[in-house]
Image 1: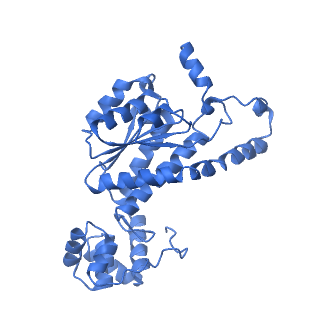
Image 2: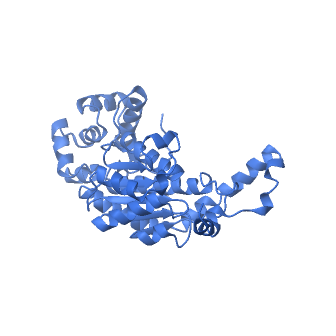
Image 3: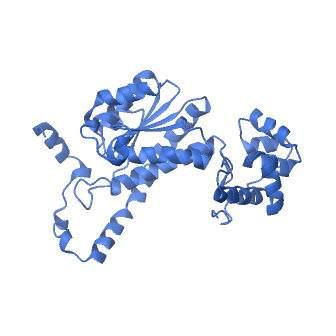
Length: 322
């Protein structure tokens, strides 16, 4: 480690040493668990202080995706894995194309399970990865780094911004290099970790919370929900089939048998099933109406003359998954 890098790490809150925890390994297990739990409770508050920045970034991302762009996460180590996880959850949750939300991790897919030494320090690797997915100005790139200085994440944001893509810098350090490089800096300062420098703890939790918001609210803005119901699910197994039936029933008030019939007629797709039950349209007509309104169920219902009140499941506490 160079003296310059050592000096920079010494200034980072995420790397700070906490002398009051020097005896951590001698504490009873329950006391360590209580200590970690207390630290974890501070993370949502830190995220809450950045809500205006997060909301602004989400609105900008949704606009890019609405015109055909993609959302790309770029990070190394824990930050990269969290991005890959969030990207992987979007197709089964929101019915998106796997290419719509992309998770890039320094070192490639192998780095999800095994550390790839030196990958996070490579600016060239970040640029090559973005070129490899054909990044364009319509896309949005979120660089994720606890320290806010990881070369892979910073270079990804710098390259994306130079191309005209939307950029967000998600860091856990104030005044970070990553934040300065991005159009939308989101710096969630969670403070020193229980284990010095182990940013898989509070910093990782903060990153997961923020990316949960980013992907979820973006999909809400894109019309992939109806109220608080997931209406772009695909019934690819028995559990999801039951979940789709329940969603159709919650949205329409239909009996389970009627929901099943509507789903069968709609080829297992939730949105047209709901539309046919609420409007009486034939499945083919419902599909055409949805397509004309960009897949937005509420707009399609209004166009069909149905008063699109909030979905029955919204805010009732009835939305738990089977």
